Image (cartoon, rainbow, N blue to C red; front, side, top):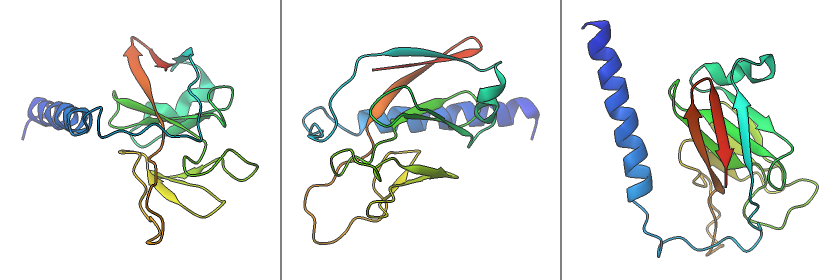
Length: 152
């Protein structure tokens, strides 16, 4: 298989995954998280700066502590697609233990050890006795040249 064919397949599946993610939820399916207030911001990340080297490879992530409640996790999906998630655990009010820690494609809250998938934001280990649980709060991440702009 040629390099061009592999490249086009990766682009197709990346676009398919992103379209599926956004089209699979209607606005009526989403309930606003009562624990996390909405912040309005726009933050450019220059990928040429050394503090963002981890974002140059698929699966790399960086915490931007000055954004959001407990920071924003920026995650490189496939080399040129980025997702941004609130770093505060979405299933309780922000507290000293509620900042999620990232390992591979998982974000874990140390308060109750909830684990979230950084590809979808979904809770991976929901307890059986809780009815309403929230996914990670998603922020926009747009590639502009050698930068990724995170905004809400």
